[in-house]
Image (cartoon, rainbow, N blue to C red; front, side, top):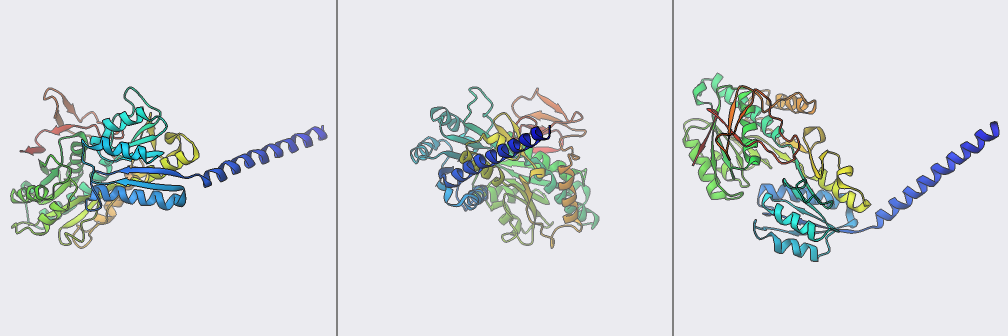
Length: 398
């Protein structure tokens, strides 16, 4: 019997050695492998949105060094992406990251045409639509969490203004410069005002759409118009520093403060910038490139929540980050409260789209949403789906 145990033990040891040897050989082979990674951007480093993706590209290059050859296309206007997809294909890209919502149809079409190339669409909504392709993927961070948390910081500033007698509760007005009336934008500003109202229940919001992702002149003009209407907080889902400049240059009789998106505006608006939030795209992108290098499935490799070929995550996986807090301007205790809210999100304790609110769909006025029954954002989609305008809380101005 003892002899049998010894033989079994030796066999087990040899099996482990064999497995380790195989894995080491595979790992060594992967270390020698080089792939070409393509990036398609709607802007360049001058816009916060694209600059955020470019930081993720840099993180990919730093993570894999000589194993990655990066090819980037900048300032690709939506509608002109076919040419640049083909160029990236012709450059022998093994994986392509497309980073603007309007690229999605072309991205999936090229994935179908080139099944050996992994095509990944940030902010896309069509990965799980038929035809479902093994090489086509979508991903996005659950940014409503950051928007809501930034709203809490803004609400604390409004409360400070009320408590100090600078404004009264009827003047708790928030202005928002949005790009398009898309769910991604609507979900974001709704989460933001709900964060504000968790501190100041009387707060309401005015939204102006630029119908452009990036238009400095229009964003600045609309922000100024919102300030002139009495808004004491300005935020944005747009790509330029226009709203920040409008806040910093204001001569309004009441103070106004800025909450940014994608990048800190502390240098541009040092006396009005409060904080902001962003998606950290690098966690997904590093993982996806690693999956291609190792011949693995992307959704089984990236550390996030997968639904089919779509992936998402929030504060709990560091896909969402708060920007720096301007403690010179922010209300006392803001940093601590923001950290607390982030921790509550990590524990699943925050219910954002919930309360005594009725929303009306932007697509069908007969379609309403009662938030007494909680709306779960990003339930089965990384891209936001909430597209309801809250009655008596949010006003859309043409």
